[in-house]
Length: 526
Image 1 (cartoon, rainbow, N blue to C red):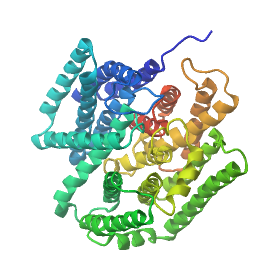
Image 2: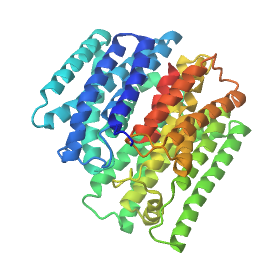
Image 3: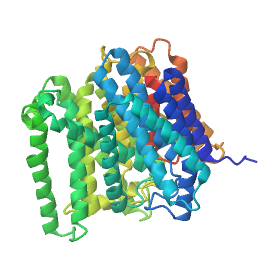
Image 4: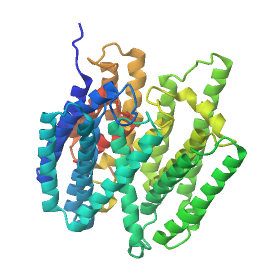
């Protein structure tokens, strides 16, 4: 008889192992605060889960999943901690201070989310309040001792943006996120928005900087503005008419050409379109990569059209299988690996542009903007799974984010030789390994031949073992083809990191496409 195991406890145990690894490696004030945050998050997650089951949460969150407070609360603090260590060793004082702000901001956002849960729980959970209070006191005291006044103000700005964005996003998009996913997504966006505002106010200092570093924040903020404006506007007018569609496309053009283009030109000192043209046509290799990626886009479109043709020819209840959905993982791996091998800067720009296109198409589908809104809605419903329970379809966006975040986060200024030593050389490949290779292998092989299930979950031990093996094979291939990767004997650490992330994949009910690459990135950066 299979023993009963609570998946939330195993998920928390895996996250605890990651936190202890970071704490043991760094052993400073902020790593102690991370341990305190983990303890309070474990207590608070139980309260959040009870609120979700009883329907007492303030907003409607994604059903059939736990709150995910423990894994989500630790991502930003741990990322800030490990990146701070690398920046300090490289002598980059500015980035070291920024990563400290990231660490404290992540802790403050997690504490705020805990405060919401404790505020609406009845009766008041005294023990949990005491634990949360002690943790908050330790974190705030450490922030006071280690941050300057301007950095404290910056943390408060991130918190303020997070509060407003959370109210807007969770009200307009019910059942799209768990509390943990909302913390991760909205918290990350809040940090990006705050940094862009800060740089815009001192744009004269940033003028002439590398445009690659500014393209992503401008596109993220522009896409956010577009979504919020039209979500509020279409509450008062019909969105499926040709007049609304014309208005939508006109306002999108005005936002792009009249606001985002001048905004970006302030940072780079020239017209963005001219810069982009020169950037892409810099050499033949870049043109070849762009042509190759265009062919892969056509292949992905062909998969979507073929599957919809099969649905029309067969049963209307036909849904894409797990194997079919993993085709897109294979296509994304085929997209990112050549980019990482031959031109990571071009991949950085292309993935940022792809994110903007994905968000725009999702707005068109969600608002049913003519002429593509209804066809997109019909075609993409074929690929829905249980995680797409809200009005938005976010799985493909999470897949892109999971693959691209390690590239966007990679601390290039803290890697003088262009790569980090040891296991850190695999940091840009964290998304490829965790999602593109590991998750794909686990899903396909686990659903096909898996028989022994992990206690308390539908995932199989065969799938997890296949995931670890496939990622190790992937690392071996990277050692052959990427001469910049030099592991310096860190094989046991890589195996341990991959195994921990594979266990997290087996037991988490959060969006694994987003969570797994970030935890693998944290472990590899150590």
